[in-house]
Length: 263
Image 1 (tube, rainbow, N blue to C red):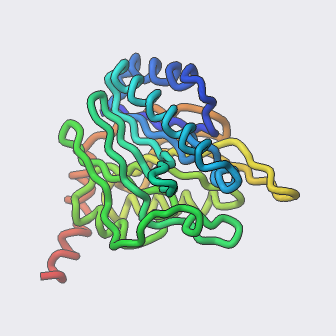
Image 2: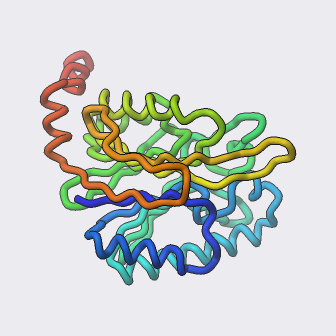
């Protein structure tokens, strides 16, 4: 099965760039595309000072574009999106298919002093439940970038027999090496693929430069990085094979050992 990760900064309102990439994906036989965080919307620090009606207009326009393009090219797309409902703002991930759209609110939000999504968004604080779906007998789960730091997300991935974790993120500063090691470890210990789409571009905050470094990648169930991009806008095309997932689970038996102790 062929997948793609689009490594982007905030897209313009025009659909031309997405249409260009989607046309490439159709030609390459891609079935699912993952977009990086804050590609459909402005970056979080810009949203903080943006009128709520402008946020809503930006999101609604991008939703219409994605619906049309998925139908046009017969593609499934997983993309972070900011939703506005009843004057409340939610950080979500949307799964666009040719005939349907499903939204999943992010469940862990960054709560740092310099980057406090938890305070800005109105997402409910509830027990974690991973969004999952199946395409061609491959089970996908969605773990947003910040959620990847919490064990409960990976326990859910293991209990639900997820084959591929889709991870949109917007990582910046000096976290590249830490993220790389974390993804390799999580993929290995959970015997699954991780496809990560990380944002590129920059944001100026006074004297502080926020540079989003990209390096979107595919990590296989044995903990090896199969493909990785650089730090510019790019598209990653990759093939995943469920047989590799099954072989890793049979070889290492992490879940089997855990299940024995839970009985």
